Image (cartoon, rainbow, N blue to C red; front, side):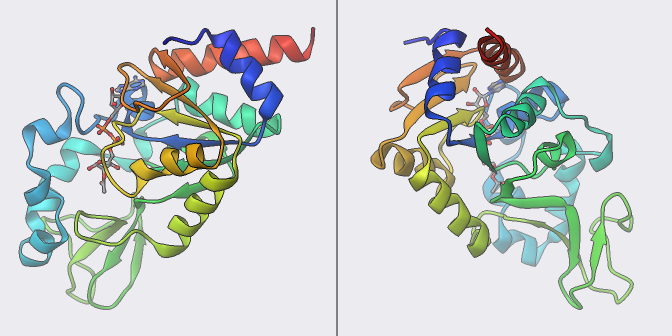
Length: 245
Ligand code: OAD
């Protein structure tokens, strides 16, 4: 079922209390590759090798080797129309929380204030030995890069085999279980516990709107099969035109 933008706009205006779950697809139009879409990062690299904490501990150069294929220069990417629409919806009192699996920092760069980054952020790079934090782009060169103390540096992101930051997960679960609408944007919804959040929202009575170029979440109440930037801009337009009617 494909929902017209107006139907989704009316749902958001009526129910408000919207929580948004985003994945790599929302940043695709900003030039950042996804993981599992065609041409995605995991087509070229095996995540159980290149994104595993176990392997990182033995040979951190594997992780650092692919990092440049994903995000080469952290500060050079710009938010797109979808990130910007979510800021407007927060300003209008419709979106109350963004939960993102993305580590690219683009929601905050766009201006969203209530953002929880459940897989961490590439902005902070932490020494595994002394705990010193470096902020991108000011991180030492090298594969792997080393801290001034000689320790190996690791971004403050979640690798496979690591726990999610507990406070972030707590916020994500609380927000998912109390929202009235959840927008699920650009995620394949296969990595847990993030993939469970729309299920939690639905179990607590929220309506689920999926925005994706192909459908990934089978229990969505509405599906908008469109690029995130186009879909969100149109939904925002429908909301603002209704508010001034
Ligand atoms: P995926 O790469 O698994 O999924 C991207 C989704 O975005 C797919 O469903 C695409 O159809 C959709 N998509 C692609 N381009 C789009 C566009 N322009 N507009 C809308 N949708 C689009 O990315 P995630 O679901 O975010 O984990 O992956 C989840 C986690 O797996 C990531 O956070 C990362 C990865 O391994 C960690 O790093 C721990």
